[in-house]
Length: 241
Image 1: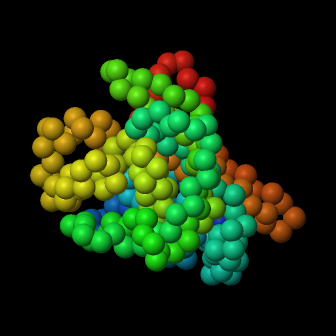
Image 2: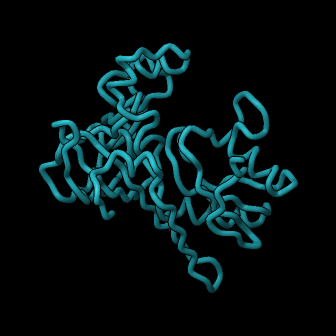
């Protein structure tokens, strides 16, 4: 039986959970188990659980859940004040010509896109900064890929996905910021083709929030979520992150 939550850390004031790819953070349709917050409230046995940070449906990894209103306010200030160190890993298309790079490019709504939720790098957008470090370059079926560590310095919606695509290295499996956004339109209505599935290579995009750290009172909180099986199966063997 699949557990309600993959619990990483439990504290009197918060939980840290490892969200699986494909699970939305907030309810859309379905029962209480169809969203992360629904599962959190079932796990806690009450409705006081509040998500402090959020991940896209297809992004896996660490989410912090405050268990009181006071903790939610304090943790929210830490996240919004950039006092939380966040790290992600991703698998991207291509071999970057650089070993590390700071991408500083403003983000705003994408113009001319059929995907309503899509954003992009735009001249008058909100400031956004992402640090990317190449961990490894590899090939799969004769095609180049890279495994990268990503350190977002700001927290814009879809920031990592947008910046990596803008830099010429979209995340593997990204239905919006990959080479054909129409795949996302087919995905939301359940009409993806076999060619779509083959081109995407993975059922969910390969982005994982693997580490969080912050100071809470006198304690230093450090949380790590191992890369999911989808990553392990895609990366060459043996592989050490």
